[in-house]
Amino acid sequence: MTSKRLFTVGIVGLVFTTLLGIQVSGNPSEALAIQSRPTLPKLETFAIEIQTAGLDKNALGSALPPRAVVTSSIKVANLGMENKRDVLLRLSLENTRGEIVAETSLLVYVPYQKTNTYSVSLLIREGGEFSVVAEVVSQGRAVTAVGNGVVITPLDLFA
Image (tube, rainbow, N blue to C red; front, side, top):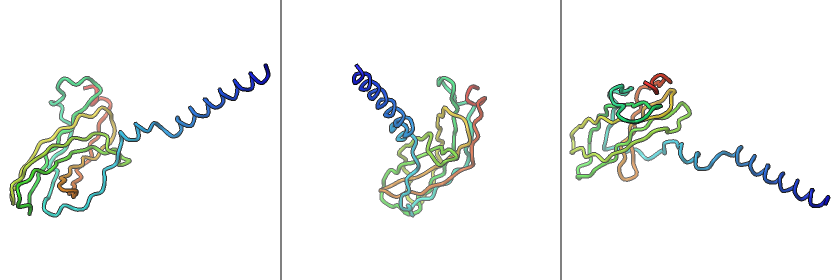
């Protein structure tokens, strides 16, 4: 009976240690959900500028609280890509640790030596201070613009 009790205590201890190790190391799926922006070689043929960025009180739609919508006006200029090709326009919100907490992307076409302006919105479900980051990506190269910070209060999430 003593060896049976010792075996049971050992198993319980092993399970507890394993669970504690998982808790300390974190959940791998959560680690994948919050990512930092990768650094890509510079895309010399495009320029990007965030003209406006802020909370859009009129764009909440049917999303249930907590939620806020950040809308940005992004100006994209094609300075040197002559061949007709769509490029990826990506808008993201980064928290103060540099982690991407919300992101959206779309394919856009900007004719050679022309400038187009796009309005892009992001739904976010958490409050805090965020940086708005816009990026144009083509063939493994990117050009990035960082806009003004956006502060989202708990009242903004339930408005």
